[in-house]
Image (cartoon, rainbow, N blue to C red):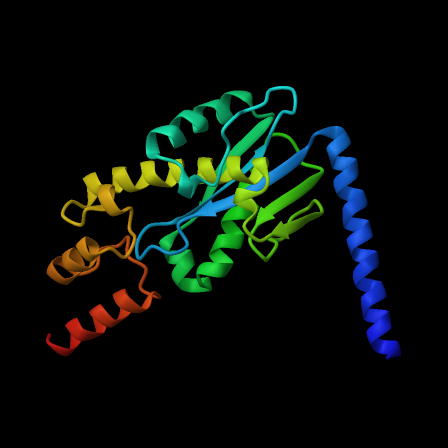
Length: 220
């Protein structure tokens, strides 16, 4: 019972300490929202964004990027870049995803985005249930992209930046349909993978790509 009580007390102390950091950051207005796009696709990098919103220049309509239409996402992305105190976008490559796994690559991209900010945040709010290694305190929020405007803004920047990358990759690697499915596991993508085989953008650590390559080796 004493061990349990100690753990509960320690957890409460950590929560209070985190709340104090967050309250201090609210006073300065330097709270950074962090989110990523592209954890699930079979191809392409994972892209993260970090955004410090300006409380004096509100942006209306911020939502989780997944519930916004592409045209609305682009409109909001432009406003975020114009009105935010600071913002940055970073990525982890396909090679890094295959080397360290998608979870660690996601956290790496997030850390790189925060490190690229021209203004140092006082506190970070991160979408999900795990924190990247940051120089500032912060907390992870499950479904944070639907709850916190700064995370919603980061979600929008990450998604629009990655979509632009995939459209550019579509020109470099024609035939796969990257501009349509953005690397996700759609029937069209599976069909093109079967017909053409994986290209350098495909994540070999992901089972559908790995199994396809293994099958191809059997018939070589």
